[in-house]
Length: 324
Image: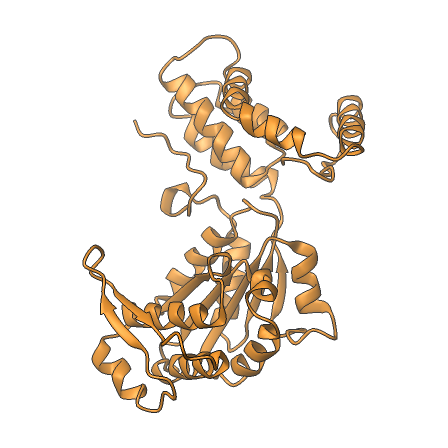
């Protein structure tokens, strides 16, 4: 029997955990001409949730990780390369006649994909971005509007000076495109979309992604653990007491616990033993984390731990550097 839990990558199909209300809300936004800014800490499942909603629309989409982009020119390259995966070159070429800077296309023999590059001497990067985004609007149609997803959007401020202003002026002209902005640096994303001085002030609907409700996560765990143990309710409860419904850590601990039960890896309390295994696996990570703390951080961590021990049923409030 295959382990029914997955973490660390995009979660789809049977691995996806509920979030039906959030899913329906995003689908409604995509069915309109509005845009969305989705904010949450890392590993809350933003990308998985958005991709599930986008695929339900059956519309073309482009997803860009802004952390992997280092310049405005590279941003233009990535968007153009993504368009070539969605539409045949023949269609794209018709709309590229008005490009002020003509790109070079080459085929990567390892991937059979088309790579795009602009001349190194092309210094007017704003012009490149304008032409590429204009192309996005031209190939998109009212019936099959393109959805353009910017993951880790807060990185825009490090890619190019004034890029936020330039990109905002370009995006506001697109009529057949939905934009989704994902971000894990909450304070930076709040500043981008809620600060009146920001070019992206209220450009889209703002959505804060929270932890999955305990009742929904309990049903998700019970349904899977019930296939291998009669103590599934106890197992599910113990897992959620530890992870406090954090999506990534719940899937990770559930995966380890499921393996332990299904393959009879050890006796005793399966959840406690699974936690012990995970702690050993991440020993170097914890050591690196501890060494990078400043002098006052350990005091805050110990204080938070004491509070949690004294009040185990208290509502979870992350410490400044909490791994959860």
